[in-house]
Image 1 (tube, rainbow, N blue to C red):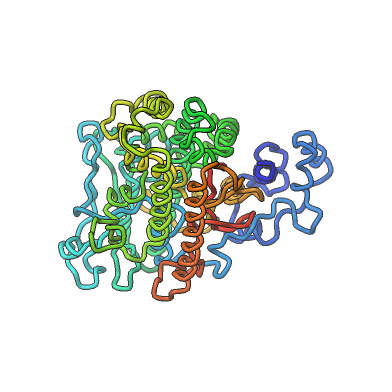
Image 2 (image 1 turned 135 degrees about the vertical axis):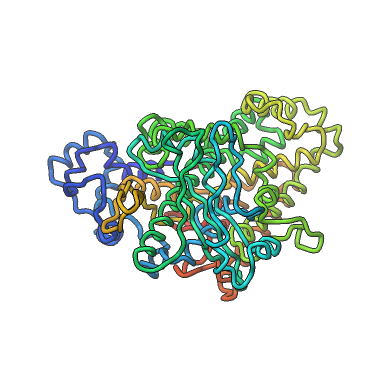
Length: 566
């Protein structure tokens, strides 16, 4: 935690001390070009003048200054070069990389199988009018490698990244904050080589006469000249949506927020000697501390989230809306979540009875191996203490724990039929496995450039050609924090103490789990070296290691920490 605070203070110094803005030019809140962005990574910023140093000293604890004002030759506010631009500074802008990141990027948990064409909205028609897609066959059919739209649907070759229905209810209000975003739908085609090809992007705004009049949409396809500029900008708006979804939904809501009731209930209802407490306790390390810290500077009114994530002051309200309307506990399990998105289907001949619809889906391939290893470990552990279903039913501490999780922690959803009843060993095993995996759904340790675009008006009332790109400094600071492992991190398959349990069988079962984790690491390395798996590295030449279980400290783009500690 001490390491984290040092990194955090270094990375948000320009937020807590506005005087630092004078170090920059006449547009202190913006970068004027991509070259300025690269300078932050390659050159850093020279130390400010003495007056600013004195001012900063008054605001930052002395023990932190050594990290902020480096004496080892590293410049003030010099950030690690993002992995996606280390080998090639422009490859991330290609269509191939744009599509690949939906399978192996920062937020690979949104893409889904397209079930019908054109895509239809699930929003209430009376409230929001016609929100169905305006994409037509003529927009995509020439790019389907000889297939018709109907054939592509039947062969399960069409996919969608859908940020439409989640944004439309808030879009009008968001766009009054100074930000300019669009609801988006992106259709993609699965090619014969296993990679995805983006076909079309639809950007939508609420109707100016009111929500009930539906959406005003424009459709963009790859092109040349000015059409290529428009296509690149459309991709940028999709990237902004996906990045915001990652930070607000995948990261904050589905890990930090939804896991907190489990942490509280475990500490309130289970004794430290209880077998389920011993199973889960390592995965609570620093979670409450970091959540409290987040409430002070990240998700508070006017905090970093509102400054950096596009929903601005509506960020927390929007995450609450999505929790209320979309969050369920069973769907946090990776196999269930993949099936819900249509990215996997039950198949008795496939490993673990689950077949991926995109075979080279790095997040799902690696994630399922990790998930099933965790499930196997929990299946070995729980029966050591619960011999029958009656043992589960008669454990008063366990029943009080589960009652508090449901009725207090997630009280507004306590009557939902999908909650496990906690009456059988299978329900206990499934719930603990689910907790293990959904606590770490996001892959936020993978550093990448996050670019925030401001409104550009012009051409047809939508966009003009882009000469300069405006980028907020704060997202770079935030991404550095969220990508950094502390030196004392404990990873999946590891424990702080080797004597965490008195029972030899439990220690042996955990040792078996640790060996399985090491096998997974070897398999990930092997897959990353397989040139036939094009989605493992892509045009940016960055091997997919986000779900590589262990890591050293710092910014590494790998590692599954035991707990939600940042």
